[in-house]
Each structure stands twice: as structure tokens, then as C-alpha cells.
Amino acid sequence: MKPKILVSRQVFPEIVEQLSAHFEVDHNANDDILSAEQLRVRAAGCVGVMCCLTEKIDAAFFAACPTVKVVSNIAVGYNNIDVAEASRRGVMATNTPGVLDDTTADLTFTLLMATARRITETEARLRRGEWKKGFALQQWLGADVHHAKLGIIGMGRIGETIARRASGFDMQVSYYNRKPLDAATEAKLNVRYASKEAILRESDFVVVMVPYSKDTHHLIGAAELALMKPSAIFINTARGGVADDAALIAALKEKRIAGAGLDVFENEPALNPEFLKLDNVVLIPHIGSATHNTRLNMAKLAAENLTRALQGRTPPNLINP
Image (cartoon, rainbow, N blue to C red; front, side, top):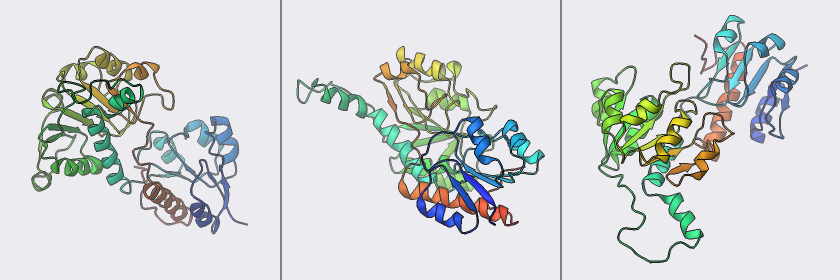
């Protein structure tokens, strides 16, 4: 009899087939978000769970599901998992880094450019029949991306990939990170280290690319937004909660910054309705990694992590300390 696993969200058929060679698979093919109770019920008796950020794998889950030995997250982030509790109970936890760097960097630049050039706002105006004057010199003016100053807060793999994209636009790139890059990497990327405060004060575009944790909660709040130039644009493709949504809405309403491009939100999928009233923000529903190839590769890596762990081998992306 094969050991049982739970795949808590819908994944590609080939992933289910791959896992079924080794396990009895309970696949949530309807893709409903499981409540905490539903998750615990379906994971009962399972040795592994493959999940997404929508599933909260906390102490209560581990207490209710003592047979679970591996939690494989289909994401780079893992703030949905109580890793300390997992480690205490001897449960391995894994994530899927690396396979989504380029795709997320592409989406970050998509948001940056769409916000700078007011793409969604002007398309909406066009659809509403507001284009009356044809070509008009001072109508719907945006901001240039080329030669602009880009500040990146959080210089991990995705941050570095964004910096490489910026070089194609001849942008001046500064970055802030807990640990500065070595001189050779800085030279290769053509970036310079700066304080977070300097980046906020000087940049035309501020991109935040840090994981979410208690240390990064509201890393960008009212005080940080107050440092930014009135012409500056804020981009968040990292995690909701890294930015204070209420403070950001206030800054956008009062035109204290020029705009924002957001892929993530504090209480997603719930969205603060005040965002919907603003023309100077581009909103997309957490699609940073949402291409077919990338999401498939994420699921493949998550399946590999889970399979190797349950076969008694060290998974390639173990996040336990």
C-alpha cells in the first residue's frame, strides 16, 4: 500500500501522475481554498503535504496531523509555514527557489513600465470614450524609465535579476540589502550599495523584493513613503504585508508619491477597496510567477522535494534551520 499525500491546490496533471507513481494522492482538483479544519481533515493520515501560500501550516495543523513528515511549499516564500514548529516536530519543510526568478523580474518590469506610462489608467479612459482631443502635447504624461534611478530593497536572486533587466534601460541602480554584495558582483551588475533611506529619497522607482517575516512587516510604511519624491513610483512584487497598504493608499490619494504598481496585498485575496478608487496605481492579482512554464517548474520542484524527502533523501530545497 502506497503512503498517502495531500496536494492541497490544483496542480498540472503530469505532476499528479508523477506523484502517483510513489504515493496515494489526494488532489484538491477543484482548487477550492481549504479552511484550516478542512486542511487538517484531508491531511489526516498523510505523510506529506504539497501546498501553496494559501494554506496555513501552523502548530495546530501539526498537532492534528502527526503523521505528516514533509511540507512542500509551491512557492519561494514560506511565511505560511511555522518552520520552527515543523523543526521541533522533525518535519521537513521545503520551498521552490530559483525557477521563478526571471519570470518575476519580467513581471516587476511590466508593472514598473505600466505604472510609469499610465497604461491601465489611459486604457480605461480610452474605453470610457474620454479620448477627445487626439494627440495632445500635455495629455496623460507619464515618466521615462530609461536613464532613471532605480532603487532595489532586497538584493537576493530576484533582485539581482531585476538589476540585470534595468541595465537594458540604462538605469542607475542602487540597492539595499542586509548584507552587501561583493565588489565583483556589484561591478558585474553595475549597481551600488546605499542605505534604505538614501534609496527612498533619491530613487525615481523603488522596488521592494524581500521575503515577508516579522522583521519585514510594514518595512515600507508612512515614514518610508514620506521620504520618497513626489515624482517617485513604488513597486511591490514581493509579499503583501511588506508594505503598509493603508499608508500607501494615503500617499497615493494625497499625491505624495506619483504612483504604485502592486502584485501583492496585505490581506489577499481580499483587497482594500480604496485602491480601486485610485487612478495612479496598477493592480494585479499576485501573478508574479504566473506563466505556464514557470508554474509547471515550480510544481515539479515541489514534487521532487516531497518525493526525495519521503524516500529518506535530503530534499534540494530544505528550509529548516
